[in-house]
Image (cartoon, rainbow, N blue to C red; front, top):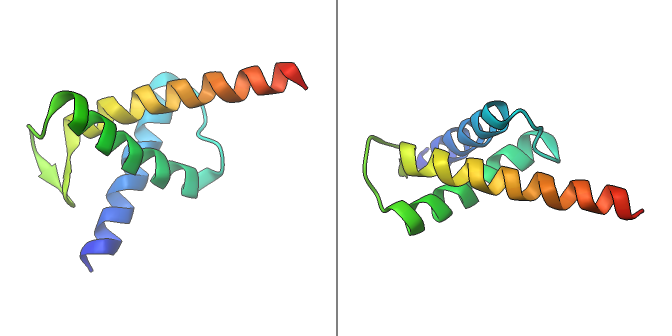
Length: 84
């Protein structure tokens, strides 16, 4: 049950990150989950594990990390579309 909870929280974090910066995460819900997990890893690497923890995610650093990740990912996909 813990893994399922982590997937749900990761998806919500990825979705919120996309909503905050106004860009869609590629690959839909799977992309949101991946963005949430990578954002949580990136956020905890940069900011540490502080704030409320839900589903093994420190929410504030995970959200900040996911925002950074989604922004960088959207820039990469945008440049790939221009190149083709």
